[in-house]
Image (cartoon, rainbow, N blue to C red):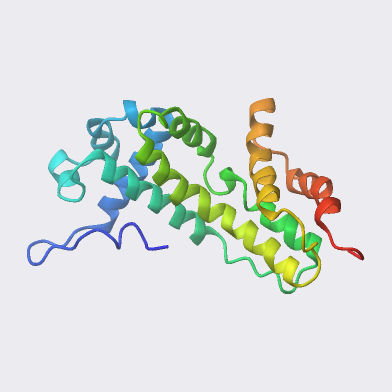
Length: 208
């Protein structure tokens, strides 16, 4: 996943860009996306929150859409940087499954994640292209880690060859949203354990 800051076009000559300014703009954008959503978010709000000027923002992003796409990539990169790659080789199958489900929580690194997801879903019909970007940048990579973990366990013989891994990923990911909608708060610490306890018997191979 390329770093959002590194992907910005570089100027030749003149004063070099300050990465801290770009990061402040991206962070302000993500906060506004969580509180206001894409439709109500304005670039004026972003520059005010970031403490920069409009020309400073426009030198880096020509419009709101491109800024938001980079803010999504930035958030995903920050999340991936917050914890190391999942190494399941030294884990028992159930432990590997549980750890992958735990890292699936949208709030694993972003306490505003549920509001962010809700606002993008609310804008899905008005901004379908942006919603697709949100899925590509924020949803698919997260779910891919769990799917790869399950595939690894399947290849190792711990998961049944006929197990529906895609459905398992959907159920695990959706469990966090269901829990939030029912309780209105963050999932309890044992959420991943409970999800795995419910699903593991239906996908485990005989002997596991």
